[in-house]
Amino acid sequence: MSRAGSNHAARHLARNPHRNHDVYIRRVHDLGLQLNGERDWAAGPASNPRDALSKIRALMNDRIDPVFSSLFDDLPESGYLLEDDDVVGVVLEDLDRFSMICEAVCNVADLGPYSDLDDKLYAMWPHALKWLAFFHPGDGRIRPPTTAPNLHLVLTNLALVYLSMFQANRGHAERLFVERPDMLHPVFDLWLHFPRYVPPVARQPEFDPVDTIHNILNVISYMHNLVAGWDHPHVQRRSRKMPINKDDARDLFIRELQRHARGKGGLHVHFAKQNQYLAELPMPPRLADQVWYIHFQLQTEVLNLPMFRLDVSPRSFLRSVVSAGECCIERGMHTYALRAVDIISLVCEAGGNNRTLIRSIEAGAYTLLSNAGEVLKEDRSVAALSHRISLGIAQQSVLRAFHRIHGDRFVSSDKLPGDPTRATYAETVFYNYCYRYTLYAAVCKKGAGLAHMPCSNETGPHVRGGVRVCPCGEGFYCSKECQRKHWRAGHRTNCCAADGPWGLHGLISLGDILYLNVEANLCIRQRPPAVVSGVLEVYRQGRQPIIVIEAIQEYPGTYASVRSFEDDVFAALLADPTEPIHEAFIEVRITLGRTRHARILPFKYDIAYFTKTA
Image (tube, rainbow, N blue to C red; front, side):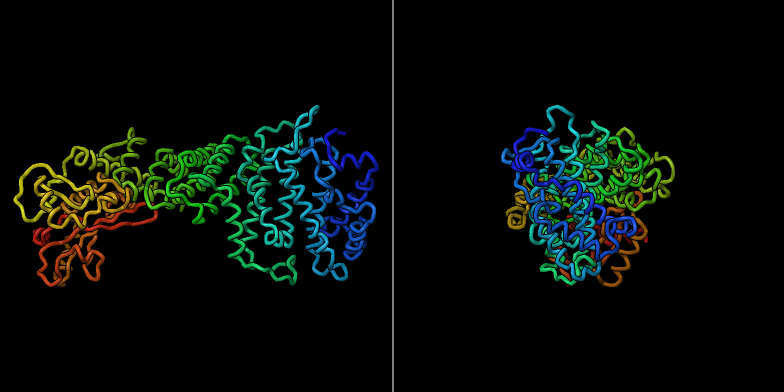
């Protein structure tokens, strides 16, 4: 036996208070198997359920050495134990059998005269939690043996006890959830930091890192399911009324998890390390499917909660998701690679901007999308991220990011291979990129394309030459003098430049706005038949036509439609409705993260322009 100091070890040497431990623990184990239906009544110590409950009560009421008595022992005065200390083995075995008996007793539909057993067992959980906290790997209280290799016995059993608590002991877990929510902190810590706690190599045949991680993931999954089904009755709750409802339980879950989300990176920092760790961990096929499924499912469920969303996700997290997805593809698990694609889509929609989308593209999200889509071309996940990127590249900064990563594949839109209208989701993204970048390279990149922009200073005089743009993105001028006059005439009070272009606080750049203006103008100049007929139809009805330009997923990624002015949010910008209608206004819509923004552009088209082709 180790010389590590502990109250229990000293007493054990002096008078062996747990002298009946081995006998009692085997007996209670057999009784638990019988109650759980895993052993026949004719092949065990009890003849029926009531007899088993009677014997369990007797073992718990033993005045000299009751079963599970090690849980009541004080923690060692030294503050630590060696892993091969006898005390560790005794307590771990008691924790395992204790959770097993809790499950067995909780599942008995009618306890009859033994109804006190449920409360007796529940009263022991604070002592069990005391030891579970002591055994937590992050606190360094369990140290490797000095003369033998680290067996990681404590880590393995810790995961199993937590799993039993939330999987099988729902009745007790719910009560602990309410009365001891602090117990969730070490459980969340074990999950979020398993890359630090679980060695990636099985140094001993008795220790399986993949199996241990699988158990840890299942613990959180069952805990989440417990909260999600809080209001559902079940046999272990019996007639007990819970003092909180599902929303309260959810708030407790979130509050304890939020204690681990520190700094700007939130939980994403922990998830990044988990993803990278699992991508590098060799896994047997029998467990790989289950591990990746639960792992991605947990991240998706947590990141779906509003309080864990980030406006901009860390680059390390995005790279890790792509790396994990590519790892799944290499191992032939395309279904789980699609779950990685789901996570990318989810975080891109979390903020009110496209910065996460840009970072995702830089991390290789489109490559992952293409590789995953090779097998499951029409999958919902592939469609969702394809749609997100196609909408995103309507913004110049996203388009340029895509070109930086995939520019070696660029071909001009007039030389595209195949039929873009019959392409897969992932291929359509590439075709849309080629179409848009052809426009960008030919017009915007060379500083041209703004000749159609009217001077915002209507009083003149005007000069021909370059175009000056107000930092707000809503004023265009032919000269510095016109810009000064317009400012004095009233633009000073309406200018939103202090809040960034379009007043969006930096969500969009001035270059993005110029690109949108050029694209809208070129789209209308092509005189799409639907736009021509739409403008004239609205005009004939005596209403103000507004041409709407927006990004879509289908090639070429731009869609033009016509609506009429009615009770419009842009009423202040539009002409007096009592005046004769002579022009069609232009509205552009752009999606930034989860939000779609719309603006009336500063140029118009005369109705006569459309009658020429009618």
